[in-house]
Length: 132
Image 1 (spheres, rainbow, N blue to C red):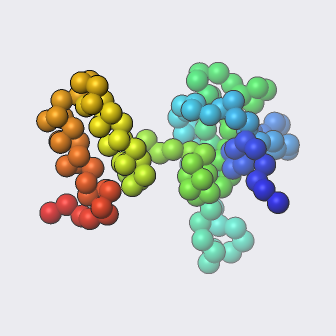
Image 2 (tube, rainbow, N blue to C red):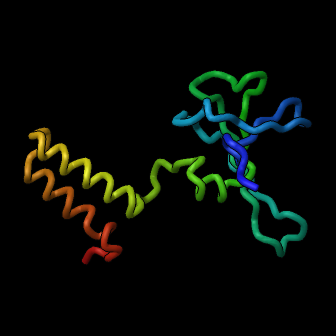
């Protein structure tokens, strides 16, 4: 069975008792994390569970709700439902950025020097090597 469409880890709550999924209309939306809650499921020997409470989206309430909650933060980040502002660039993203820069250089929208500088910066990410 496949995953349902929409954001499966981002939930809205109404009156604290009903939950429903956020839909794809929130794609590419910026929001500030209002609160991060952590707790153990069951005993304290179990790992911490992290819930992010998101504030008003684009300065407006989410329907009848003021907040959204990310119930499975780790899954939401891994699946790309949530993008961290300070996260490291992936190898695939670095390759895509370099390809785009090459195209810009070919149409004279970027200088060869700028391209070489970017290439040098992205090389460790693409080759998975640490910079010395």
